[in-house]
Length: 493
Image 1 (cartoon, rainbow, N blue to C red):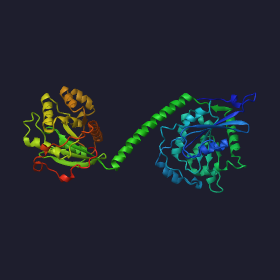
Image 2 (image 1 turned 90 degrees about the vertical axis):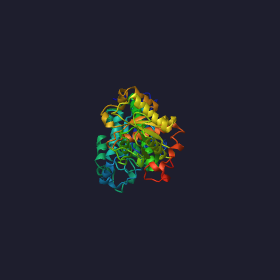
Image 3 (image 1 turned 135 degrees about the vertical axis):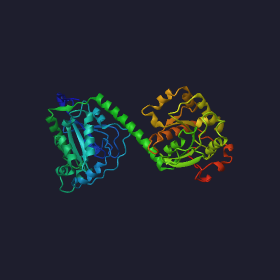
Image 4 (image 1 turned 60 degrees about the horizontal axis):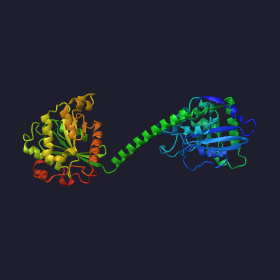
């Protein structure tokens, strides 16, 4: 953006139009921009009682000169914990801080710099409005610098600080003393504007002896003279690009805040419950996987599991209940002892009214042959029925063996049998590093995938318990909880 001569702006030589001065007002939340714009215009042109979400333009005539005033939305001031310490250290000349907490900007609002388009071909003066009732911190200084930078290079030559709320200063304290006592951030802003500033009391705009607007316009004329009659030229294309980038960032911020809000609600409210059944052949690491998901050593790994064991923990805002089961034979269903087959079914019965997901544990280090695949599927269908495929997910254990190899690449290398197994499970799969319980960040992702599967299953959110699974349950299963405590009140049913 360039500064160009405004000689053509001095007025029509035939006197048809008075000469014009264009003022762009920028400032943070509750700085008094709108009231200042109304004071300059001499009328309540803008609504000072509501938050400004879009730039507005008003015009008046002051001493024979047409004055265009553009009020803009407040610039965003990010929260910064360091500001509290800085505020405490600043004397602030006795001015009390009554800055209310700021809601995040909405996508319905526009950036403040878009207001520059409303005063073509560009503003003669950029008025940075600062309230003396609010501490001007380093964060606010950076926000001001960022907004001026968004307009383009050379903006500081056309800038002036306008202080509002000066009637709130202690008696006998002048604006110069306030600047000196407030701190380095405000002093930097004033110096960056070439020590150009003006004090406004917006409560005096109706009084007859109100000379603050004429005095402001005199300072604007001095600024224009210092700039040899030039104004700040606005490049609309660049401003529109800046606005598009701002909105894209705002959309991403809102998406992340919504995700955080949902997570906080999930953690703060009644926990959702997920009921998971660990299945697989012997030695695949089911117990270690259960420990990884629950975040601590609940199951004894490193030895063969003989009886089903149920454990529960709060994980990522969900109440997760897991049942570990004895391992199957990898060769055939008939070679898996009947007691083990019954124990698998009784494990599902411990997850009343039924497991949401059957986690079929498969080590990434093992190869899957056609016989192994058929045996796994035969176990699932024989024990849990044909609809079990809707609730089955392949969970790869020993994920640390992959190193930097993506699991998708491992699946491609695993051959057709592995791919057919995943197709049976609706291509639901996940990989865990079961060596570090409680430290694997992918556990939360796993739970998200399980909830996605539950949503996909609709009214078949879980695998209902069958009557035959309940036979002789108490004689085989091992659990530290009473049956009455089983998984009731599940919000995902």
